[in-house]
Length: 314
Image (cartoon, rainbow, N blue to C red):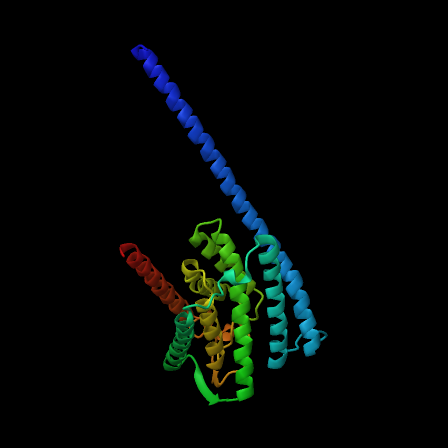
């Protein structure tokens, strides 16, 4: 072939290659969009099913516990909350099991419930929650934002509180981290998935008593804290332990938990609720909570960043 013919031949070859690459890119993008839409649809269906099925379980649990639905100002006893909590747990596990088995066709344990070599992470989560609440309580005492009244130790109520907040931690972590975050990570960037699941976590608490925008932002950051380790490990035992410890020691030190008043060993008085002491919403409605969450997020991020770096250099 002459030189012009060679150039024309090469040009046609490059055009064909570009068209082939362009077609493959379009197909790949369409497949990615399809996968993402499928994930969003599955999560949406899951959430609808969750509210229906778990709502029924909670209603049955409330009837068995003897909750008075006719009195709008009625406050459940700790026993009633625990009974309803157990029904909430059963309902949540049922919905997740149905979707895992019949929709995803995966084992329930793949939510992140594997226990091998996870004891240290669980213990660290418990200790971390205790340290944060203890420091927060002592700082507020020092700043004269709260004033110690007395110690009210009741062994029976303590056991009920431990059981209740264990159930709350397991339910919310298997639901939002184990199912929702894991599914989002299968189709989206892990940090996009983390932020989205944390927004859902915050929105879930938007109807709690004494809630306000600042406390919802704090709960969003709490979702980041609880989900950050999961996007690296896909294991739930650290977030479950951290969630349990955060809630349990928050109430035992006298704070409301996400706006709800439960049994406390330490009782204190707040002269004026504000964003330093958290007011009626509890510690999670305070600047101290935000600071603690940001520091924890940075610490967890640095830990896994170094872990990945060390793994890559080995």
